[in-house]
Length: 339
Length: 133
Picture 1 (cartoon, helix red, strand yellow):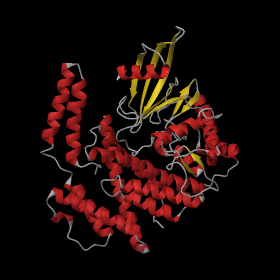
Picture 2: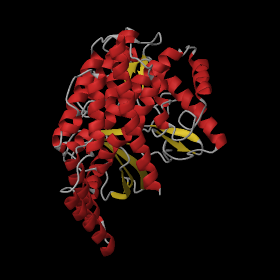
Picture 3: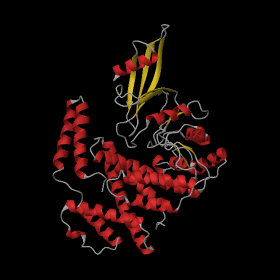
Picture 4: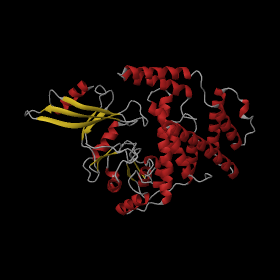
Protein backbone atom coordinates (compact mmCIF):
# COMPACT_ATOMS: atom_id res chain seq x y z
CA UNK A 1 0.00 0.00 0.00
CA UNK A 2 2.83 2.37 0.90
CA UNK A 3 4.43 1.81 -2.52
CA UNK A 4 1.16 2.36 -4.40
CA UNK A 5 0.52 5.56 -2.47
CA UNK A 6 4.04 6.76 -3.11
CA UNK A 7 3.50 6.38 -6.86
CA UNK A 8 0.07 7.97 -6.67
CA UNK A 9 1.30 11.04 -4.77
CA UNK A 10 4.28 11.26 -7.12
CA UNK A 11 1.95 11.66 -10.10
CA UNK A 12 -0.14 14.29 -8.37
CA UNK A 13 2.80 16.26 -6.97
CA UNK A 14 4.94 15.90 -10.14
CA UNK A 15 7.74 14.53 -8.01
CA UNK A 16 9.93 11.45 -7.92
CA UNK A 17 11.08 9.62 -4.81
CA UNK A 18 8.01 10.42 -2.75
CA UNK A 19 8.25 8.93 0.73
CA UNK A 20 5.31 8.02 2.91
CA UNK A 21 5.77 8.07 6.70
CA UNK A 22 3.53 7.83 9.76
CA UNK A 23 0.91 5.87 7.83
CA UNK A 24 -2.03 5.23 10.18
CA UNK A 25 -5.29 3.44 9.38
CA UNK A 26 -7.86 4.97 11.74
CA UNK A 27 -10.17 2.06 12.54
CA UNK A 28 -12.58 3.75 14.91
CA UNK A 29 -15.57 4.04 12.58
CA UNK A 30 -17.87 1.58 10.83
CA UNK A 31 -18.24 3.35 7.54
CA UNK A 32 -15.72 5.48 5.59
CA UNK A 33 -12.11 4.58 6.31
CA UNK A 34 -9.51 7.22 7.06
CA UNK A 35 -5.77 6.94 6.57
CA UNK A 36 -3.36 9.68 7.63
CA UNK A 37 0.28 10.02 6.61
CA UNK A 38 3.21 12.36 6.13
CA UNK A 39 4.32 12.74 2.52
CA UNK A 40 7.87 13.91 1.80
CA UNK A 41 9.23 14.88 -1.60
CA UNK A 42 11.68 17.17 -3.36
CA UNK A 43 10.11 19.73 -5.68
CA UNK A 44 11.39 20.88 -9.08
CA UNK A 45 13.53 23.59 -7.44
CA UNK A 46 15.16 21.07 -5.14
CA UNK A 47 13.25 22.10 -2.01
CA UNK A 48 12.47 19.37 0.52
CA UNK A 49 8.80 19.43 1.33
CA UNK A 50 6.81 17.48 3.95
CA UNK A 51 3.03 17.68 4.23
CA UNK A 52 0.36 15.75 6.13
CA UNK A 53 -2.47 14.18 4.17
CA UNK A 54 -5.62 12.31 5.11
CA UNK A 55 -7.30 9.89 2.70
CA UNK A 56 -10.97 9.14 3.02
CA UNK A 57 -11.66 5.80 1.40
CA UNK A 58 -15.10 4.50 0.47
CA UNK A 59 -15.75 1.21 2.29
CA UNK A 60 -16.62 -1.98 0.41
CA UNK A 61 -19.60 -2.54 2.66
CA UNK A 62 -20.20 -0.24 5.62
CA UNK A 63 -23.17 0.41 7.86
CA UNK A 64 -24.37 3.25 5.62
CA UNK A 65 -23.95 1.59 2.20
CA UNK A 66 -24.54 2.35 -0.65
CA UNK A 67 -22.05 5.23 -0.95
CA UNK A 68 -21.67 8.12 -3.36
CA UNK A 69 -18.11 9.42 -3.20
CA UNK A 70 -18.70 12.05 -5.88
CA UNK A 71 -21.49 13.58 -3.81
CA UNK A 72 -19.36 13.55 -0.66
CA UNK A 73 -16.44 15.14 -2.46
CA UNK A 74 -18.63 17.82 -4.04
CA UNK A 75 -20.20 18.73 -0.70
CA UNK A 76 -16.81 18.90 1.02
CA UNK A 77 -15.48 21.10 -1.80
CA UNK A 78 -18.30 23.59 -1.30
CA UNK A 79 -17.72 23.77 2.45
CA UNK A 80 -13.98 24.46 2.29
CA UNK A 81 -13.30 28.13 2.92
CA UNK A 82 -16.70 28.98 4.36
CA UNK A 83 -16.06 31.29 7.32
CA UNK A 84 -16.84 29.72 10.68
CA UNK A 85 -16.97 26.14 9.40
CA UNK A 86 -13.52 24.58 9.89
CA UNK A 87 -12.90 22.03 7.15
CA UNK A 88 -9.72 20.32 5.96
CA UNK A 89 -8.46 21.57 2.58
CA UNK A 90 -9.39 19.22 -0.24
CA UNK A 91 -6.90 18.00 -2.88
CA UNK A 92 -7.87 15.17 -5.24
CA UNK A 93 -10.62 12.65 -5.93
CA UNK A 94 -9.49 9.20 -7.07
CA UNK A 95 -12.15 6.98 -8.60
CA UNK A 96 -9.79 4.22 -9.78
CA UNK A 97 -9.97 1.35 -7.26
CA UNK A 98 -6.50 0.12 -8.30
CA UNK A 99 -4.75 2.35 -5.76
CA UNK A 100 -6.55 1.50 -2.50
CA UNK A 101 -9.08 -1.11 -3.56
CA UNK A 102 -11.90 1.45 -3.54
CA UNK A 103 -12.32 5.12 -4.58
CA UNK A 104 -11.04 7.73 -2.14
CA UNK A 105 -10.23 11.40 -1.87
CA UNK A 106 -7.23 13.19 -0.41
CA UNK A 107 -7.44 16.11 1.97
CA UNK A 108 -5.30 18.01 4.44
CA UNK A 109 -4.33 16.16 7.61
CA UNK A 110 -5.38 18.45 10.42
CA UNK A 111 -3.41 18.03 13.63
CA UNK A 112 -5.69 17.49 16.59
CA UNK A 113 -7.56 14.90 18.62
CA UNK A 114 -11.10 13.60 18.36
CA UNK A 115 -12.77 13.71 21.81
CA UNK A 116 -14.73 10.51 22.39
CA UNK A 117 -18.32 10.75 23.63
CA UNK A 118 -17.65 7.54 25.57
CA UNK A 119 -14.76 9.07 27.56
CA UNK A 120 -15.43 9.79 31.21
CA UNK A 121 -14.34 13.42 30.81
CA UNK A 122 -13.15 14.42 27.34
CA UNK A 123 -12.72 18.12 28.30
CA UNK A 124 -11.77 20.13 31.37
CA UNK A 125 -14.62 22.12 32.97
CA UNK A 126 -13.59 25.46 31.44
CA UNK A 127 -12.73 24.20 27.98
CA UNK A 128 -15.97 22.19 27.80
CA UNK A 129 -18.06 25.38 27.81
CA UNK A 130 -15.74 27.10 25.33
CA UNK A 131 -15.77 24.14 22.94
CA UNK A 132 -19.53 23.99 23.41
CA UNK A 133 -19.95 27.63 22.38
CA UNK A 134 -17.90 27.03 19.23
CA UNK A 135 -19.78 23.79 18.59
CA UNK A 136 -23.08 25.73 18.57
CA UNK A 137 -21.63 28.54 16.47
CA UNK A 138 -20.43 26.11 13.79
CA UNK A 139 -23.76 24.34 13.41
CA UNK A 140 -25.56 27.70 13.31
CA UNK A 141 -23.18 28.61 10.44
CA UNK A 142 -23.91 25.37 8.59
CA UNK A 143 -27.64 25.97 8.99
CA UNK A 144 -27.26 29.51 7.61
CA UNK A 145 -25.82 28.27 4.28
CA UNK A 146 -27.91 28.92 1.21
CA UNK A 147 -28.40 25.25 0.26
CA UNK A 148 -30.58 26.20 -2.72
CA UNK A 149 -27.52 27.66 -4.41
CA UNK A 150 -25.36 24.60 -3.68
CA UNK A 151 -24.69 21.62 -5.91
CA UNK A 152 -26.20 18.78 -3.83
CA UNK A 153 -26.54 15.13 -4.80
CA UNK A 154 -29.91 13.35 -4.73
CA UNK A 155 -29.27 11.95 -1.26
CA UNK A 156 -28.58 15.39 0.23
CA UNK A 157 -31.21 17.46 -1.61
CA UNK A 158 -34.73 17.47 -0.15
CA UNK A 159 -37.63 15.49 -1.65
CA UNK A 160 -39.93 18.38 -0.79
CA UNK A 161 -39.51 21.93 0.48
CA UNK A 162 -42.46 21.58 2.84
CA UNK A 163 -41.00 21.12 6.39
CA UNK A 164 -43.61 18.61 7.66
CA UNK A 165 -43.37 16.72 4.35
CA UNK A 166 -39.57 16.66 4.61
CA UNK A 167 -39.86 15.37 8.19
CA UNK A 168 -42.15 12.55 7.08
CA UNK A 169 -39.69 11.73 4.29
CA UNK A 170 -37.02 11.29 7.01
CA UNK A 171 -39.39 9.01 8.94
CA UNK A 172 -39.88 6.97 5.73
CA UNK A 173 -36.15 6.90 5.11
CA UNK A 174 -35.27 5.53 8.56
CA UNK A 175 -38.20 3.13 8.60
CA UNK A 176 -36.95 1.68 5.31
CA UNK A 177 -33.40 1.61 6.68
CA UNK A 178 -34.60 -0.20 9.82
CA UNK A 179 -36.66 -2.74 7.88
CA UNK A 180 -33.79 -3.53 5.53
CA UNK A 181 -31.36 -3.92 8.44
CA UNK A 182 -32.95 -5.73 11.32
CA UNK A 183 -32.71 -9.47 11.85
CA UNK A 184 -35.88 -9.60 13.93
CA UNK A 185 -38.55 -7.08 14.84
CA UNK A 186 -37.66 -4.52 17.52
CA UNK A 187 -40.90 -3.44 19.25
CA UNK A 188 -39.51 -0.15 20.58
CA UNK A 189 -38.66 1.00 17.05
CA UNK A 190 -42.12 0.12 15.76
CA UNK A 191 -43.63 2.04 18.68
CA UNK A 192 -41.44 5.05 17.89
CA UNK A 193 -42.32 5.06 14.19
CA UNK A 194 -46.05 4.82 14.96
CA UNK A 195 -45.81 7.69 17.44
CA UNK A 196 -43.71 9.85 15.09
CA UNK A 197 -46.18 9.57 12.21
CA UNK A 198 -48.93 10.92 14.44
CA UNK A 199 -46.87 13.59 16.18
CA UNK A 200 -44.85 15.41 13.53
CA UNK A 201 -43.47 18.62 15.07
CA UNK A 202 -41.01 20.67 13.05
CA UNK A 203 -39.61 24.17 12.72
CA UNK A 204 -40.51 26.59 9.94
CA UNK A 205 -37.45 26.14 7.72
CA UNK A 206 -35.24 23.67 5.93
CA UNK A 207 -31.47 23.93 6.17
CA UNK A 208 -28.39 21.92 5.31
CA UNK A 209 -28.07 19.47 8.20
CA UNK A 210 -24.76 17.78 8.97
CA UNK A 211 -26.67 14.64 9.94
CA UNK A 212 -24.08 13.33 12.43
CA UNK A 213 -23.07 16.46 14.34
CA UNK A 214 -21.85 15.43 17.77
CA UNK A 215 -18.87 14.99 20.05
CA UNK A 216 -16.75 12.41 18.26
CA UNK A 217 -17.09 14.02 14.85
CA UNK A 218 -14.78 17.01 15.16
CA UNK A 219 -11.07 17.57 15.65
CA UNK A 220 -9.92 19.61 18.60
CA UNK A 221 -6.59 21.41 19.03
CA UNK A 222 -5.67 23.77 21.87
CA UNK A 223 -9.27 23.91 23.03
CA UNK A 224 -10.62 24.85 19.59
CA UNK A 225 -12.57 22.87 17.01
CA UNK A 226 -10.29 22.83 13.95
CA UNK A 227 -12.16 20.41 11.69
CA UNK A 228 -15.71 19.09 11.30
CA UNK A 229 -15.72 15.47 10.12
CA UNK A 230 -18.05 12.79 8.71
CA UNK A 231 -20.60 14.55 6.53
CA UNK A 232 -21.95 11.35 4.98
CA UNK A 233 -25.40 11.78 6.54
CA UNK A 234 -25.72 15.41 5.43
CA UNK A 235 -29.15 16.27 4.06
CA UNK A 236 -31.48 19.20 3.73
CA UNK A 237 -33.88 19.01 6.65
CA UNK A 238 -35.13 20.50 9.88
CA UNK A 239 -32.36 22.27 11.87
CA UNK A 240 -33.76 20.72 15.06
CA UNK A 241 -32.81 17.33 13.60
CA UNK A 242 -29.11 18.22 14.12
CA UNK A 243 -29.73 19.73 17.57
CA UNK A 244 -31.62 16.68 18.83
CA UNK A 245 -28.94 14.35 17.42
CA UNK A 246 -26.14 16.25 19.17
CA UNK A 247 -28.16 16.11 22.41
CA UNK A 248 -28.82 12.34 22.37
CA UNK A 249 -27.95 10.62 25.67
CA UNK A 250 -25.89 8.14 23.63
CA UNK A 251 -23.34 10.90 22.97
CA UNK A 252 -23.10 12.09 26.58
CA UNK A 253 -21.59 9.06 28.29
CA UNK A 254 -22.37 9.53 31.97
CA UNK A 255 -22.45 13.31 31.65
CA UNK A 256 -25.69 15.29 31.86
CA UNK A 257 -24.25 17.82 29.38
CA UNK A 258 -24.91 17.83 25.64
CA UNK A 259 -21.88 16.07 24.17
CA UNK A 260 -20.10 16.57 27.56
CA UNK A 261 -20.07 20.33 26.82
CA UNK A 262 -23.15 22.33 27.76
CA UNK A 263 -26.40 21.99 29.72
CA UNK A 264 -29.16 21.39 27.15
CA UNK A 265 -30.87 24.66 28.07
CA UNK A 266 -27.67 26.66 27.40
CA UNK A 267 -27.05 24.71 24.20
CA UNK A 268 -30.49 25.60 22.84
CA UNK A 269 -30.40 29.22 24.14
CA UNK A 270 -27.09 29.83 22.36
CA UNK A 271 -28.41 28.37 19.14
CA UNK A 272 -31.57 30.48 19.35
CA UNK A 273 -29.57 33.64 19.98
CA UNK A 274 -27.34 32.98 16.98
CA UNK A 275 -30.09 32.02 14.54
CA UNK A 276 -33.13 33.93 15.81
CA UNK A 277 -35.07 30.68 15.56
CA UNK A 278 -37.30 29.40 18.37
CA UNK A 279 -36.63 25.72 19.08
CA UNK A 280 -39.93 24.16 20.10
CA UNK A 281 -39.83 21.48 22.81
CA UNK A 282 -42.23 19.37 20.69
CA UNK A 283 -39.79 19.49 17.77
CA UNK A 284 -36.87 18.48 20.00
CA UNK A 285 -38.89 15.51 21.22
CA UNK A 286 -40.00 14.49 17.72
CA UNK A 287 -36.44 14.58 16.37
CA UNK A 288 -35.04 12.91 19.44
CA UNK A 289 -37.41 9.98 18.82
CA UNK A 290 -36.50 9.80 15.11
CA UNK A 291 -32.81 10.09 15.93
CA UNK A 292 -33.00 7.23 18.40
CA UNK A 293 -34.57 5.17 15.60
CA UNK A 294 -31.80 6.30 13.26
CA UNK A 295 -28.98 5.46 15.68
CA UNK A 296 -30.47 2.10 16.64
CA UNK A 297 -31.09 1.22 12.98
CA UNK A 298 -27.47 2.01 12.07
CA UNK A 299 -26.39 -0.29 14.90
CA UNK A 300 -28.74 -3.00 13.64
CA UNK A 301 -27.32 -2.62 10.11
CA UNK A 302 -23.90 -3.49 11.53
CA UNK A 303 -25.33 -6.51 13.30
CA UNK A 304 -26.94 -7.60 10.03
CA UNK A 305 -23.60 -7.40 8.19
CA UNK A 306 -22.10 -9.66 10.84
CA UNK A 307 -25.04 -12.08 10.72
CA UNK A 308 -24.77 -12.39 6.94
CA UNK A 309 -21.05 -13.19 7.39
CA UNK A 310 -20.06 -10.22 5.25
CA UNK A 311 -17.67 -9.33 8.06
CA UNK A 312 -16.18 -11.03 11.12
CA UNK A 313 -15.59 -7.66 12.79
CA UNK A 314 -16.87 -8.34 16.29
CA UNK A 315 -17.56 -4.65 16.83
CA UNK A 316 -20.47 -5.02 14.43
CA UNK A 317 -22.01 -7.78 16.55
CA UNK A 318 -21.40 -5.61 19.60
CA UNK A 319 -23.42 -2.78 18.04
CA UNK A 320 -26.62 -4.82 18.22
CA UNK A 321 -25.94 -5.56 21.84
CA UNK A 322 -25.20 -1.85 22.49
CA UNK A 323 -28.51 -0.84 20.93
CA UNK A 324 -30.16 -2.11 24.13
CA UNK A 325 -29.38 1.12 26.00
CA UNK A 326 -30.46 3.26 23.03
CA UNK A 327 -33.80 1.46 22.85
CA UNK A 328 -34.37 1.92 26.59
CA UNK A 329 -33.62 5.65 26.17
CA UNK A 330 -36.05 5.73 23.25
CA UNK A 331 -38.88 4.23 25.30
CA UNK A 332 -38.30 6.93 27.94
CA UNK A 333 -39.14 9.52 25.24
CA UNK A 334 -42.45 7.91 24.27
CA UNK A 335 -45.82 8.25 26.01
CA UNK A 336 -47.23 5.11 27.64
CA UNK A 337 -49.76 4.34 24.91
CA UNK A 338 -48.78 5.19 21.37
CA UNK A 339 -51.28 7.41 19.58
CA UNK B 1 -31.90 -11.93 23.44
CA UNK B 2 -28.88 -10.49 21.70
CA UNK B 3 -29.43 -9.56 18.11
CA UNK B 4 -27.25 -12.04 16.22
CA UNK B 5 -28.11 -15.72 16.04
CA UNK B 6 -26.14 -17.77 18.53
CA UNK B 7 -24.48 -19.97 15.89
CA UNK B 8 -23.24 -17.00 13.91
CA UNK B 9 -22.06 -15.17 17.01
CA UNK B 10 -19.97 -18.10 18.21
CA UNK B 11 -18.63 -18.86 14.71
CA UNK B 12 -17.65 -15.20 14.28
CA UNK B 13 -16.00 -15.03 17.71
CA UNK B 14 -13.89 -18.09 16.96
CA UNK B 15 -13.01 -16.92 13.44
CA UNK B 16 -11.92 -13.48 14.62
CA UNK B 17 -9.77 -14.88 17.42
CA UNK B 18 -8.14 -17.35 15.06
CA UNK B 19 -7.79 -15.30 11.86
CA UNK B 20 -7.60 -11.69 13.05
CA UNK B 21 -6.11 -11.84 16.54
CA UNK B 22 -3.84 -14.94 16.68
CA UNK B 23 -2.58 -14.34 13.16
CA UNK B 24 -1.29 -10.91 14.14
CA UNK B 25 0.18 -11.66 17.54
CA UNK B 26 3.93 -12.25 17.81
CA UNK B 27 4.06 -13.39 21.43
CA UNK B 28 3.73 -17.24 21.29
CA UNK B 29 1.95 -17.43 24.67
CA UNK B 30 -0.67 -14.82 23.72
CA UNK B 31 -1.12 -16.43 20.29
CA UNK B 32 -1.72 -19.80 21.97
CA UNK B 33 -4.30 -18.19 24.26
CA UNK B 34 -6.20 -16.80 21.28
CA UNK B 35 -6.15 -20.20 19.51
CA UNK B 36 -7.28 -21.95 22.69
CA UNK B 37 -10.16 -19.48 23.16
CA UNK B 38 -11.22 -20.00 19.52
CA UNK B 39 -11.22 -23.77 19.95
CA UNK B 40 -13.15 -23.61 23.21
CA UNK B 41 -15.78 -21.36 21.65
CA UNK B 42 -16.12 -23.71 18.65
CA UNK B 43 -16.75 -26.65 21.01
CA UNK B 44 -19.01 -24.57 23.24
CA UNK B 45 -21.25 -23.99 20.22
CA UNK B 46 -22.22 -27.69 20.37
CA UNK B 47 -23.38 -27.34 23.97
CA UNK B 48 -25.25 -24.04 24.33
CA UNK B 49 -28.52 -22.50 23.18
CA UNK B 50 -30.48 -19.35 24.03
CA UNK B 51 -32.09 -19.68 27.45
CA UNK B 52 -35.42 -21.51 27.16
CA UNK B 53 -36.86 -19.93 30.32
CA UNK B 54 -36.39 -16.39 28.97
CA UNK B 55 -37.84 -17.32 25.57
CA UNK B 56 -40.87 -18.98 27.19
CA UNK B 57 -41.52 -15.97 29.42
CA UNK B 58 -41.46 -13.63 26.40
CA UNK B 59 -43.61 -15.95 24.30
CA UNK B 60 -46.29 -16.19 27.01
CA UNK B 61 -46.18 -12.39 27.48
CA UNK B 62 -46.62 -11.84 23.73
CA UNK B 63 -49.53 -14.30 23.62
CA UNK B 64 -51.21 -12.35 26.44
CA UNK B 65 -50.56 -8.94 24.81
CA UNK B 66 -51.98 -10.15 21.50
CA UNK B 67 -54.89 -11.87 23.30
CA UNK B 68 -54.05 -15.15 21.59
CA UNK B 69 -55.51 -18.29 23.04
CA UNK B 70 -52.38 -20.31 22.35
CA UNK B 71 -50.86 -23.24 24.19
CA UNK B 72 -48.42 -22.13 26.88
CA UNK B 73 -44.80 -21.91 25.82
CA UNK B 74 -43.96 -24.64 28.33
CA UNK B 75 -45.34 -27.12 25.78
CA UNK B 76 -42.54 -26.19 23.34
CA UNK B 77 -39.42 -28.19 24.14
CA UNK B 78 -37.22 -27.67 21.08
CA UNK B 79 -34.99 -24.60 21.32
CA UNK B 80 -35.07 -23.83 17.59
CA UNK B 81 -38.87 -23.88 17.73
CA UNK B 82 -38.83 -21.56 20.74
CA UNK B 83 -36.61 -19.07 18.89
CA UNK B 84 -38.77 -19.27 15.76
CA UNK B 85 -41.99 -18.82 17.77
CA UNK B 86 -40.48 -15.91 19.67
CA UNK B 87 -39.44 -14.14 16.43
CA UNK B 88 -42.82 -14.83 14.79
CA UNK B 89 -44.57 -13.26 17.78
CA UNK B 90 -42.38 -10.15 17.55
CA UNK B 91 -43.57 -9.89 13.95
CA UNK B 92 -47.20 -10.20 15.13
CA UNK B 93 -46.56 -7.49 17.75
CA UNK B 94 -45.18 -5.25 14.96
CA UNK B 95 -48.34 -5.86 12.90
CA UNK B 96 -50.47 -4.93 15.91
CA UNK B 97 -48.40 -1.75 16.44
CA UNK B 98 -49.02 -0.73 12.83
CA UNK B 99 -52.77 -1.25 13.08
CA UNK B 100 -55.06 1.19 14.86
CA UNK B 101 -55.90 -0.99 17.84
CA UNK B 102 -58.53 -0.20 20.46
CA UNK B 103 -57.23 1.59 23.56
CA UNK B 104 -57.16 -1.55 25.75
CA UNK B 105 -55.30 -3.52 23.10
CA UNK B 106 -52.82 -0.70 22.53
CA UNK B 107 -52.17 -0.51 26.28
CA UNK B 108 -51.51 -4.27 26.42
CA UNK B 109 -49.06 -4.01 23.52
CA UNK B 110 -47.33 -1.05 25.16
CA UNK B 111 -47.02 -3.01 28.39
CA UNK B 112 -45.40 -5.88 26.48
CA UNK B 113 -42.97 -3.54 24.69
CA UNK B 114 -41.82 -1.94 27.92
CA UNK B 115 -41.43 -5.28 29.70
CA UNK B 116 -39.59 -6.80 26.76
CA UNK B 117 -37.06 -3.99 26.49
CA UNK B 118 -36.89 -3.62 30.28
CA UNK B 119 -35.80 -7.27 30.56
CA UNK B 120 -33.24 -6.72 27.80
CA UNK B 121 -31.84 -3.71 29.63
CA UNK B 122 -31.66 -5.65 32.94
CA UNK B 123 -29.62 -8.38 31.25
CA UNK B 124 -27.44 -5.82 29.45
CA UNK B 125 -26.73 -3.99 32.72
CA UNK B 126 -26.03 -7.24 34.59
CA UNK B 127 -23.52 -8.24 31.90
CA UNK B 128 -21.75 -4.88 32.10
CA UNK B 129 -21.28 -5.21 35.84
CA UNK B 130 -20.11 -8.79 35.40
CA UNK B 131 -17.51 -7.57 32.89
CA UNK B 132 -16.19 -5.04 35.39
CA UNK B 133 -15.87 -7.50 38.29
